[in-house]
Length: 640
Image (tube, rainbow, N blue to C red; front, side, top):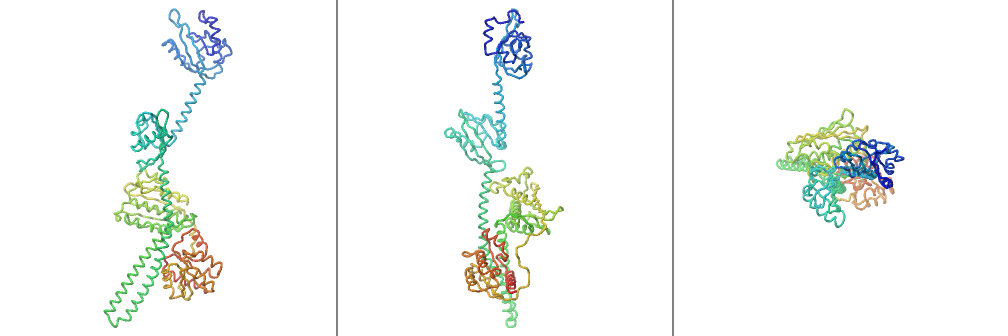
């Protein structure tokens, strides 16, 4: 029972009992002297009497909170808006906001405490949810790779999140309170200021910016948004990969165009080259025979003339031999160009790796010759599983990288070595090493990443090595790299071996030249090629030359028949493929006689057609011996 004088008067009690706030009086040791019905309800008790039987000490979730409450009252004489967590009768927590004072007796000691509380549990829950939401938002913002800067109306940074771009900007601590000029480069700071002014009038502003980074040029997509109060939010996204990808796509389109044009260029080179090769060999044979005849016939009449004539003919023969060698080198270069330029069907099969490596070395030979000596150590290898064109792409790329790692002008001091052998596990191993600048230890692990490059800006898109790895992985192969800065780099490629060699295209067996004189039709829209073939073949066969396929087709319609029809593939009116299709339909007995001579096939459809039919295709420029043997054997088959 409460001490006399500690309970409110009856009228006041009735008034307090109807207030929507909890009202209490307690002794310093925690016993209730008074409580209204609202306080009992808040604390989950069925009646005021039930509540007053409980000590206030037992209602605190944390007993230390009561000590803090008492300390404040002892110091200030009251507490204002003191928020504390208590427990209801069933143990569930609630938050109360307490305003209380200490009432002193005549001696100045605390007689009792009296105060009022309101339930602020929902407010605390809302604040907790808000803090959790802010935490999730912060975590989300921190996870974004973009850099985010918030500037106030005074143009000073109020908040910063660097994301994945921390290497590009000062630490957050240095950004806070700093103007844009202290955070960004001068050009970007100026852009942001201008964009912020524009954003206040017309919404967010998006701009692109190029900056110097630790690994070359870096590109950013920048979005500036005006904020309330005259500030600005600046978001920067690293667009370097996207920019380099766009550049690579443009470069790929250019390369695709070059590849398409290369076949046409090869065709235009091969036609006159065919005439050069054919006529050179023909003239060389004539000169050699004339020299022999001259020595036999004029030696007895004029020794001095004999010596002069013999020397002149010998020099002519040597000159023609050098022309022939030069033409052969051009032919090799054109074949390598065609191999790289022609599209691949990407279907893996058994591939002769030695041929792939030789083609790659021919393609980059001139790129290497001014920088290093190219050393070959290629053992006899089993066929590998792959795609010849794609593997050529890989080794061309690796050889170009090796060459560009060496400065030109000291070829005698450097070497690029390509070694190939069969490994102990049955796989084929190719090691390509150079004595170039090497790769920094910190960069070795990143060189296979798309767009990453150690070359100076503008020299490479950084796509090459990632593409090489992707091609090799798709074929079951692997590529590793070891490098020593200042000494050089070695790439090791491992390829799966194939059980069988690739099925060859129809080829001509090496047999003695046929003795049967045949009827041969030559179709080529280039007159000098037709004349050269006629000159080569007319000694052993009866030759009919036409510059249009329609001419021979008309002859077949009249009943003419040929043992061999040498037909160019690419012609302006009726192509070799169309000619073969018409002959197959109208004169099927003459279809096997067609032998194609190709200086380059422009379309995939033609390429597939020639691969499907049994007819032989000879590549321009064709050597006289090869042509005579092929025609002779075809004549023998036709007459058999």
